Image (tube, rainbow, N blue to C red; front, top):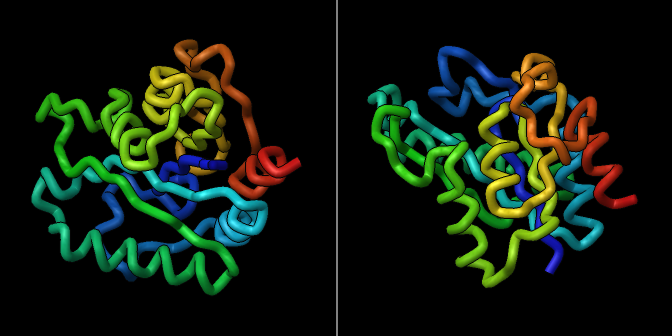
Length: 177
């Protein structure tokens, strides 16, 4: 099975320091939906792994998160793509859970659910924690320079094997090359 793991905010859609708290606030980044379509057309299962601490902070609930994700899934489908599953951590940082990236719990859950090893699986993110979680499970960390990516690019703790791309479209072109 060909699998690719994407972070959400800053990779697929515009990020906000104030959190994405409603479907109206969710706006795709240019080219991201077409990138998901390309991955789908090349036979990849596209899975999203995202920290959503706004739930743990009481900024929105799971019904709102489901509505945001429904909008994202439908937008990807309209572009010819498919998001197979969305895995999320609802906890605030202080909860000290295993599922909040940079810990690998979400990615381990993906591996269990799909009965696969994540060795070499492309994992695209814009923050250090996305890449650290990917490296922890043997996935291939790919940094995009959208969202927090430009700031992350200069981080000395970047996993050494991290590949760097301007955006999700460039990463998808590389994955499918």
